[in-house]
Structure formats: structure tokens, C-alpha cells
Length: 459
Image (cartoon, rainbow, N blue to C red):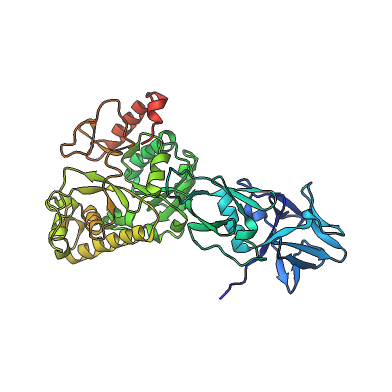
């Protein structure tokens, strides 16, 4: 069943969209680009065979040209015109290119806006890809990733609607029949912080993320503070957009398992990839190349603990694995992972894994009255569930995330060997470090003294 659009918008041949002044109601047209505020876009209704709006003087009869894929609108003896000076009105008695528009539904104009204002990664068989943004050109052309698409063949009520989409995917058609699948690239990084003590390391971690990792994207904080408190605190320190998911009156087990409640945030479907980091992790290189690699992965990428074994280490769930007959054939040398670093594409599989981990932790704890009945309960279940559903990648982060222990950065081998001096990996997890805030801050100060070519290398 088709759904009636909330409103209609008009795209002009100039590569612009008809806008309306909120105060005066005057119509104009403006380039559809990253600077355009979508709230400015004029909203029209269709009443019978006419285009109507409080900003239009009269009812404009709609004339659709199936050959060109455009529409014209006439009231009395004048056609609606998008003039080259930016004005819009009933100026001309005859129809010329300036009087041709593409009539777009509210959903279609929203799709074009997000193609222009967000970053997208084209799906392709070979070669490296980079996020790109759409550019609307004159004569109803949308360029994205070097490919030019005719907007009239992809959008517009004069044609059969032929775009299939999910919240993060759009299919565009080149030459009317060649499909190009585009995936929205909108990373988000999130942390959990409960209590004042956790904010001491969080602020240091964020400093490294923003100033060393050069991260400009959105940040989500799962916390017991209010949204206003967090934004007031962070706006004075960091330029990023902060979002807040607040949980209050939590018990101890809730602190540890809050990271797995990601799908309770209503806006999570708008983001991919997603990276969770404990507040004791320092970013030591620019982060964008790593996030792009996560974006193209299929599974949950984690920080391996090469000194653990799933069949023999309680901290990664050995009791759980030995209690489930479905995992009786698990290799004895398979290593576990640290749940303080979780990188994932935004897929239903990843969100299902996170939600399952959360419920498994609480069901097990409820049956045994507390977290400490099993060492590292949340981490143990993160390992158990991820292996059980085959949704874990130990390799992507093996050489990217290191530990900091005993006053040195250590790599992910069985002996936690010290990293070669002068090397940078990408992330340093100050796990098992006394006085974490001071150690993290000192390490960041060392990073600031490094040559730019080393600090900006790809992790």
C-alpha cells in the first residue's frame, strides 16, 4: 500500500531546491549542498490536479512531461519560474527550461539531502573506496563517487519509484538500469562512564581521540548523568556532537553490561561503523583509516588477549564454553578477547550479538546472585556469545590495539612483549595500569612530541 507523502518539494534545473522564508513566506531557490538547512525547503501539497501552498498566489495546474521527467505549473497565464537570480514566482507566459521542475515527495527529497550532506561508500568488487558526498549539478544530475546519475531516473513522482533502501543503504541507477549500491558512512564512537571517577580517564581518552585521532564525528556517552549535564561539560572542551543515553539507579552488574545496551538508543540505526572503547584507551594515530576498515568488515572486531585460552581462562569464559555441548570441539589453543574495545559495522547481526550478551549476563547473574560468581562476567559472556554465533574477528585489531602494563606498551602476543620503541599501533589500552589518568596523560604528552609523519600514519 502506498503512503501519502507528508509534502512535496521542487527541484530546479539549476541544481537547486525551492525554499521558503520562514518569516515572510517568500519563495526562492538555493543550491542543494552541505550548507543548506533542510528546514528551509518549501513544502507544497497536491490538491486534485493542482500544486498549492500558502506561499503561492493561486492554484497551479500540474503538467507532467513523461518524456523529460519534469513538471511545469501554471496559474492563469503564467508558469512558475525559478529565475537565475534566485527568485521563484509566476513570471513567464510560456514554458522554457527555467519553468521545468522535478516534483519530489518528502521521502525523496530527504534521501537526496542525505546523499548530499552525509558521506557514502559505493559498493564495488575491486579497489579501495573512500567515503564521498553527492553533488547536485544543473539539469537534474547527481554526482557521487565520480558517477553521474539522472535524478529523474531515480526520484520524482513523474516516474515509477525505483529506489530500494534501508536506513543506511540506497540503490541508485546509472543509465536507468545499472544499479549502484551505496552505504551510508557515518561513524560513531561511544563510551560508558558511571560515577565521577570514570570521567577522569574519560576526559583524557576524549582528548586523545579528538586532538591526536583527529576525530570530528559524533560521540555517544552511556552514563548516569543527564543529557544537559554531559553536553554542558563537553561543549566547553570538544567540538564534537555529543549524544547521551542515560541509565540511573544501576547495580554493579549494570555498569559492566551497559555497553551492550546500544540498541536502546533510538538513533543508532543512523550510524555505521560503531566503535566502543573503555575510558582507559588512548588513541595514538589518526582514526579515520581504521574506521573505514571496520566499515567494510562483517563481524565484531576485538582486541585479542593472546595470553588467554577460551578453554582454560576464566576471564574469557572457560566455564561457559565447557558447559555448552555445542562448543565441545573448540580448539584448545583458541585465544579470547578483551571486551574493552569493540568495533563493528552496524548490522542486525552485531546488534543482536550485543543484546544477547546483555541478557545472558543478567540471566546468569540472576541465577547465581551476582557478577563475581564468575570472573569478568560481562567479558566472559562477550567471548562466549560471539564465538557461539560465529560473529568475532580477532585479526583486524591484533596489531592495532596494544596494552600498557609495567610502564611499557605491549603487543598482543602470549608473553605481552614490549612493543618496538618508536612504533605506533593505533590504540593503547591502559588495562592493568595503576593511576591510569596520570599514565594516560603522560603518554599523550609523549605523543605530542613525535614527528607529524609518524603520528599521522595509518593504523
